[in-house]
Amino acid sequence: CGVFGIYAPGEDVAKLTYFGLYALQHRGQESAGIATFAGEQVHLHKDMGLVSHVFNESTLSKLPGNLAVGHTRYSTTGSSRKVNAQPAVVDTRLGSIALAHNGNLVNTGHLREELLKSKCNLVTTTDSEMIAFAIAEEINAGADWLEGCIRAFNRCQGAFSLVIGTPTGVMGVRDPNGIRPLVIGTLGENPVRYVLASETCGLDIIGADYLRDVEPGELVWITEDGLASFPWSQQPQKKLCIFEMIYFARPDSMMNDETLYSYRLRLGRRLAEESAVEADIVFGVPDSGVPAAIGFSQASGIPYAEGLIKNRYVGRTFIQPTQMMRESGIKMKLNPLKDVLYGKRVVIVDDSIVRGTTSRKLVKTLRDAGVVEVHMRISSPPVTHPCFYGIDTDTQDQLIAATKSVEEIAKQLEVDSLAYLSWKGMLEATREDTNSFCSACFTGDYPTSIPEALKGSKLI
Ligand code: 5GP
Ligand code: SF4
Ligand code: MG
Image (cartoon, rainbow, N blue to C red):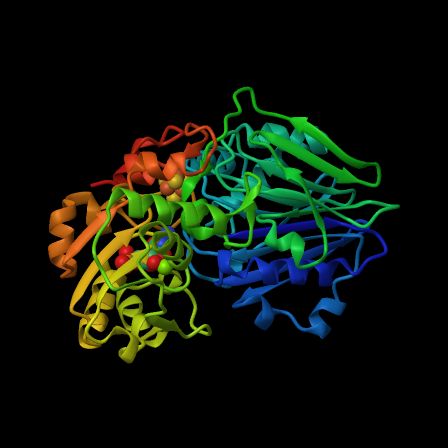
């Protein structure tokens, strides 16, 4: 999911949030929503669909206020229905809160029992709304905004980057592992306005300057007094999702002081060093495989050429919920350049193989276009474990590398050779402490405990 928040009295906060969400559209295409606060009064508009479909000038004009929070939803838990769209608005003793969540909690079973005991009315099925109810419960028991939120966060386990609107200010929060990203930006001077966004591309679009990340286990509270920081976790550690870096986040977003384009370029270079091959051209699977393919070309000296053209109006195939839809999605999406490919030995680079369905279809497309050798190179290691933290890599039995060796996968995809980047290569290319990332879908080494019942639902 994508989250956005802004505190900017005097500005059209709904419109700025709209554009922020527009830049974060890649993080979720299922539903979109904006909540604004004009004093105590909360205004909300949300619906299924893309940001540009859900909002227009008229709906935005009905969202007045000094502050706003927004959300684009990518469905991983809860069903695909309008009631699950966010922000989730919940009433408390001190006024309403509007909560936008990116990530997945892992202790929802326990949390739901607790909340039901205190007779909370769990209308929808999402973990995100449970966080909002937990906050309301703490506040209604007598806590103030900060205290109530912090108590609620300590009851949550898993991944949560949150943006929360209240009548007095906007909060930005990351879980103790900082699994999902969240950045702070500033807009203008005298007075300085603060903005929160999942990625820096959400700041760029409204002309905000990147200030810093919200830290793991940190809460920032933005009010008329400015920005205040409250570290709330006893054991914060950096465990940013490495999949954000290799695939999910936009290549023009900055993480660890560089664009993800630059990181992905290095992944491709490293991949060429680790698994060289003789070929005539190299190209990436658009769009996610392209930066690594350019890096592969640079390091190997094999010329880069476009081999596949993407229809940019078709969404990412993996957002589609069923296997059948996914399989029919691919033809609409990628078309081969037959005269470029005919008679060639090609290196095709992609960021990841998850189920292998996309890759298998692509190889067939290339053979049909007259390619004589297909060498597939993947700029991440084999995905062997499911994600419990908000990226839909499916249950373990759906993951091709969970049960098959690289050789067996190569056979199934009908490629002449297949190589993945090493786990070490992927982490060393970050130029950060290699311990500061979650890479559990490649190792099974999850940064939080996972309750047995949840494990059983996804692991073989
Ligand atoms: P596959 O060959 O596993 O069907 O698809 C791999 C390609 O689709 C890669 O280009 C990757 O960018 C994208 N992809 C497909 N499904 C998923 C998914 O569930 N999670 C992620 N992270 N990427 C996916
Ligand atoms: Fe990211 Fe994989 Fe960790 Fe999930 S398991 S948070 S996709 S690195
Ligand atoms: Mg892709």
